[in-house]
Image (cartoon, rainbow, N blue to C red; front, top):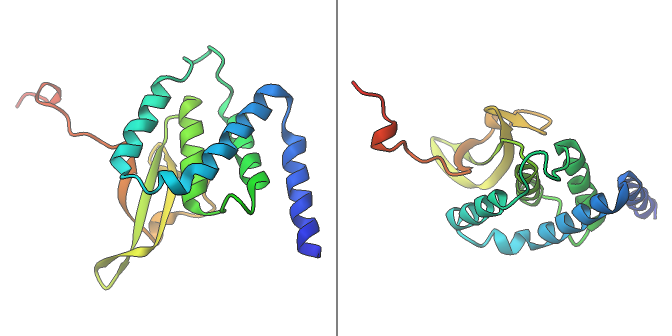
Length: 168
C-alpha cells in the first residue's frame, strides 16, 4: 500500500507543476507521444529520424510561441510520471520523448544509441540511449559512454558533399 501512495504523491507533484493551458496541452501531447514510442521503436531509425526532423522543421520559429526548454522538459517529465504504468519508464521512452519535444523547442541536441562491448564484440542487449548536448551527455546522472559504445545517433550525420570539402 505504501508504494501506491508514493506513486500517487509523485503524480500529484507532476500535476501541480503544470501552469496554464499551454503546459497542460504540451503534457498531454508528450503523454500521447510516450504511449506511441513502442510502435515508433519498431520503425527503422532512419525512417523515424526523417519524420522527426520534418516535425522539427514544422515547429514554430524561435520567439514565435516556443516555450523555454526548461518548461518543455518539465512538461515531458510530468507526462512520463503521470503515464505510469501505461508508459514504461525506459531509457528509450524517456530518450525519444525528450528528444522530440526538446528539439521542437529549439534545443540543439542528439539522441545516441549505444551497445555493450563484451570480449571485443558488440552485444545488442543490454543497450542504452541518451541525449547529448555539445558532445556531452545531457540529463544523465553519469556518463553512459563509460559503459556503452555509441553505435547510432539522431539526427543522422551526413557526410559533407564535394562543395563542402576544403580545397587541397
